[in-house]
Amino acid sequence: MQKAILISLAELPSDPLWLGRQPCPVIAYGEGESQSADVIVADLSAAKILEQRINTWPIAAMTLVQVLRTSELLPVAQALDVESMAYAALQGGAEFRAWQVAHTAEAMPLQEAGDALLLNRDGAMLEAILNRVSSRNAISVEMRDAWLEALQLLEADESITELRFRAKGSCFSVGGELREFGSAPDTATAHWVRTVHSPARMLAALSARLRFDVHGACIGSGIELPAFAGHVAAHKKSFFQLPELQLGLIPGAGGTVSMARRIGRQRVAWMVLAGRRINAQTALAWGLIDEILDR
Image (cartoon, rainbow, N blue to C red):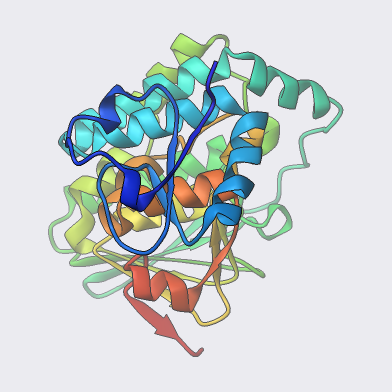
């Protein structure tokens, strides 16, 4: 089975339907632009680095580009459905199971005192502060449910003109609580939970009234969810990363939708397939964030 196609930009077919017929990631190299590739990198050596990672997790890599190709053609709600179903399929696969086996000994942390999300209102502005410093504000079930409550309040109260998220501690969020991954009874139930309880749909619907001020590490859902907002400001030393491939997964908190609509599917694919960080300056240039903060 061919796991990746490496091809120079000059050799890419011009047929707009060609990419959709390819069963694996298409990595183009060279200077220029084309919609007939999943990722474009500078040269063949950079393409081969991506190929090595694709060869390690070929099913997750294939699924990622299939979702990105499809979701850019769909409204947000339907694109989120596609992402969740693909994520559920990967949770039942060998690549994710291998990651689970390697991490089965990790115990859940002790629950911190106080609310996971602190809410403060100042006139028409509602502030939501992530308050799980010891877990680096991981998006656990507890944290997810607290986000939903804050968003439901925003939806119900039209006198709130802005809901602004920020976080305590060294970083905004390291993403999903890994020790909860795969804890649903089965992958179908996990898909149902993401459909009914994920903050992504409400974030997308309420984006015009949402602002995120992020800092430090913004990993996985720690950037996938903020990317839905109408305005994202980041401290100048923030960084952003999508590490899901090495779990045998794809972004599952809405990132294939929110981030692709900000920076394009090719850059999202590169972030996942490469697994590399980007800094705040790159994020601003790409449009992943809207402002850099000195403070």
